[in-house]
Length: 145
Image 1 (tube, rainbow, N blue to C red):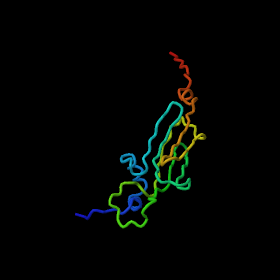
Image 2: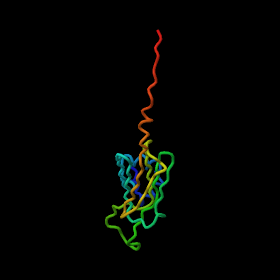
Image 3: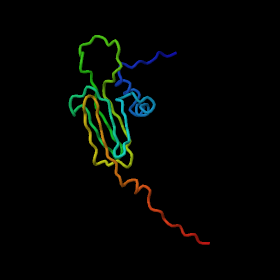
Image 4: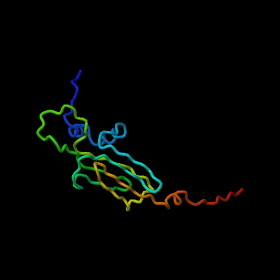
């Protein structure tokens, strides 16, 4: 039997297993990166991302590609740079990247993001006319015998 491979960091695991692996795994094991809640309100989509310890907007970026929102950055441990040993290590640290597919009725030019107390809150209003357009107009069918 081969000896079990141990990863010394999440970054090492990402290098060996690849980014595509982690995208698939985030569907199965959603706690690989920062935890994310997505809620649909009556007028807007609300996305809450747990990102404790950020100090400035340079620590995180939000990019939009079509209807995919990409949240990327790095979580660091702001204490104990000279620690000899971690006795218990549960908090996620290191680089992260989360991709979130947005519903088609989101108004992409009206996205707002705020960071406060370890929580990144993104709100995206809905296009109220979208549903009417989505239903479309009925077209008469003429049958001929």
